[in-house]
Image (cartoon, rainbow, N blue to C red):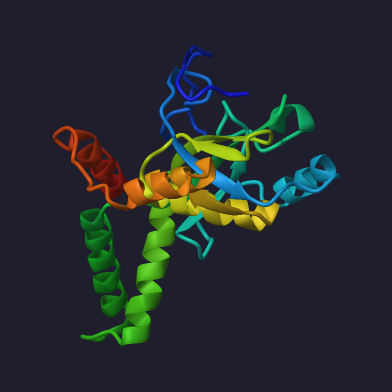
Length: 244
């Protein structure tokens, strides 16, 4: 069973080379283990290993290609290797835990670059056609062609975030506190395993502990207190802004 606070060391950082632009920690194997917790509602089926393995493999990450219509895509990958798309039982089942990584690819073309290239393409098109203006449809088609051309000259940005699902406790530990990665993970988890996730909060924790009537009354009378100066919250907001 994974502990709620720990520190671990692992292999050296993944070499990127031509495989893509990768950002984000592989927190389950390396570094300080900080995570958000989610409660799993429901129990795995008796044949969960076989059933879950089929479902995971059906949702393994499909890397973005320049001609794809999608600008962003997410899927499962191997913990420790965001580009590891061949998942076996030993990669997923670790003792009483299921360990996976949620990889998200996203095209990020700088706005000024796209604008400049599009302007040049429009001018060349008008000169070729001997016209002064483009129709709305022509502008949209040119923008798509220019965007695909620029995608072929770069790689999508890749982010991977680990999770560990303790089957014994019914708890998922997700190694990011940002809202957007958590939302992506939750949607993928529900589609894959058919079980819902409930984010941990003081209220959900109290409900799980099972308070008696006196404790429940005292709990309802509590007033929230802000601890610290909010640096952690600002850091998470900056991380989420960077991903948007």
